[in-house]
Image 1 (cartoon, helix red, strand yellow):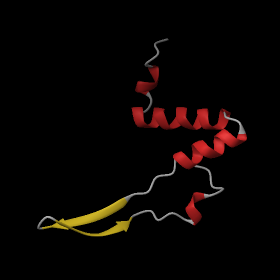
Image 2 (cartoon, rainbow, N blue to C red):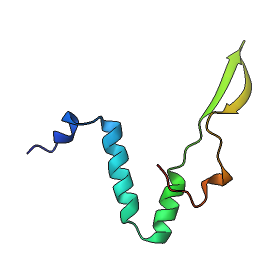
Image 3 (cartoon, rainbow, N blue to C red):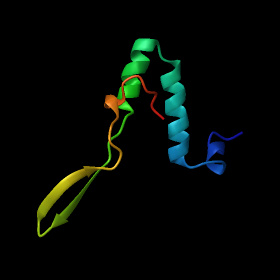
Image 4 (cartoon, rainbow, N blue to C red):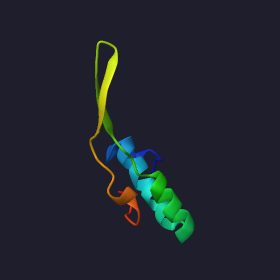
Length: 72
């Protein structure tokens, strides 16, 4: 069996997501919580006109700073 067999089943991004989740779940509690915090992302949108940036809009606002919620 080739080490690249996963490519026939799903994309690299999905593979990276699965492996990252497995690594985070295998960590001890304190390291796991720190790793989950690093996994939280914030997506912002800003419209630029004439070289001037408008107001930034969060497309997925953080709820309670993501504390106690698992990264998905």
